[in-house]
Amino acid sequence: MTDARLYSPATARNRQPILEVLDEALPGPARVLELASGSGEHACHFAAARADWDWQPSDPNPQARASITAWREAQALPNLRTPLALDATSDWPAESFEAIVAINLVHISPWAVTEALMARAGERLAPGGMLLLYGPFLCETQPTAPSNHAFDADLRARDARWGIRDLADVTREAQRHGLSLERRVAMPANNLCLIWRRGGHLRG
Image 1 (cartoon, rainbow, N blue to C red):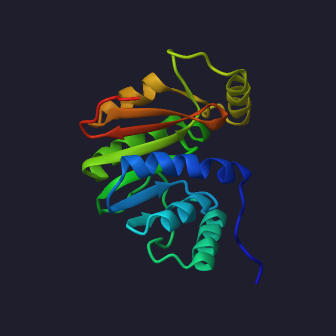
Image 2 (tube, one colour):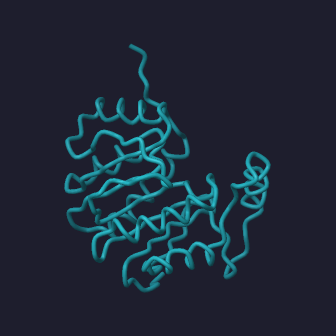
């Protein structure tokens, strides 16, 4: 049988820095829902690092889910669940989660996905739960890197509904659903890790 596992060079570069942010923000046992899990490499890396995290990957793309399943079977991680066929704008699992994670999602999707993500996070996060977003964002407090300007133009050329989001717009949408920006962490390749939490306060 052909190996269904997909590989992403970008994931190999960013998974450990993201894990370090997650590790600090989520020090104890947790149920985690990951949206748009893609190849499944992030999910495997995180689940392998933290046996006390019950990791639920998801992706609307059948090829991505096949890759996640193949990675899961190859690594035999008991805390990594079978991937869900979940679109952020569709029905979510009825259970609650201590954390929701979305890596490189909001800029490669219509704005309606960000709206749905924040609304569902406000409903599905347990009290004190956190939402982590990773990717490029526009921030009025710091200049946008030329590479991000070029990336934004490329995204919009591919789909006019896509594009790098303004952090202020994303934060306002989060606040509408009871989520406060707790932490902002500069990451490699001009990306950010952003953590929203119910009742959180910006500290970095």
